[in-house]
Amino acid sequence: MELFGITFMLGMAALAGGFGNSIVVSRFLDGIVRQPEAQGLLPRMLLGIALVEAVPIIAVGVGIFLLIQGGYFG
Amino acid sequence: MDAKSPQLELGFLQFDVPTMIGTILTCIIVFLITYLGARGVQMRRPGKKQLIVEMIIGFIRNMLHENMDRRNAERYIGFAVTLFLFVFFANQLGVVLMVTGTMETDLPSLGLMEGDKVSWFKSPTANMSVPVVMAVAITLFAHVMGIFTHPKTYFKDYLNPMHIIGEITKPMTHAMRLWANIFAGEILIMVLVTVGSPLITGAPLIIWIGYSLFIGAIQAYVFTILASIYIAQKVSPES
Image 1 (cartoon, helix red, strand yellow):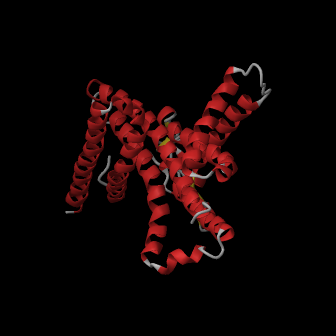
Image 2 (cartoon, rainbow over the protein chains, first blue to last red):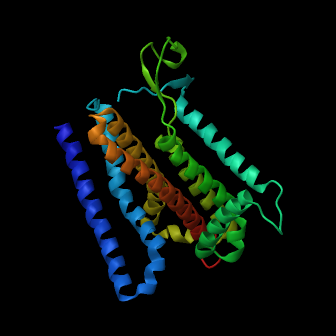
Image 3 (cartoon, each protein chain N blue to C red):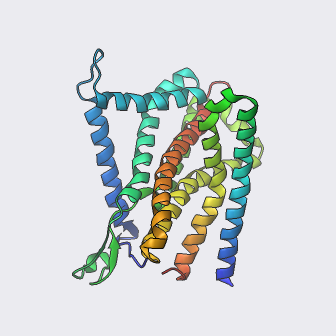
């Protein structure tokens, strides 16, 4: 049951991270198609991706930590 | 995958030996780079090393000027450059240098027995203590500077109790973001190295190592920019 909870958390984190990143990247692509000079905003987009990725990756970190603590690893 | 992490106990304190080795190594690398770059500084004909250090400082200075007013940006540039260089090299250390050895003899003072696998080098930021200490220190510093610069208006924000929750979650997410990224990256590298045949895991391993280097650089940048934003919120003149 614990294993199911952890894996469910990891899966939901991956799902949420994928959707969040897709919104950021699609808006950026929309922007540079409409206005090609906006390509200079690429570092800003990467910063946004890093900020969006934070919450799912925290879930992944905590999940792996729980897996190691529970002895499921290795 | 069953690599142990040797612990050193001193009273009620517990020290993680690979993290200590990694921290000292990162300090030496950062010191050498800045020392060699800043030695023999010339105005007319700058050398290659000087140009690299100047490029890093200019990059951080631009970032600070976007977030702070002019006077504060010049004041905190040393802090921000130090923080960026330390976190950057600490993140790359576990990707570049991951050495796992097997003990030949017993070492009871560190709790190691013969035949144990030990990874001596890993990123200091992959241990939760290091980012938490840095984030809490930055938050404390920001609050103390806020009290000193705006003694009258500082406590006005706390009339709204939700603000206190925000102030507590700030250092938590600030530290966990860095820790979780580096920790997950190292664990995945370890899994790809130890599990399965190299024919299957070889290509993902190379891709993931490149991605880890990129993640390390981005996270160092994000950590520095968030630290500067948190300090700027407290010391900026208009608040």
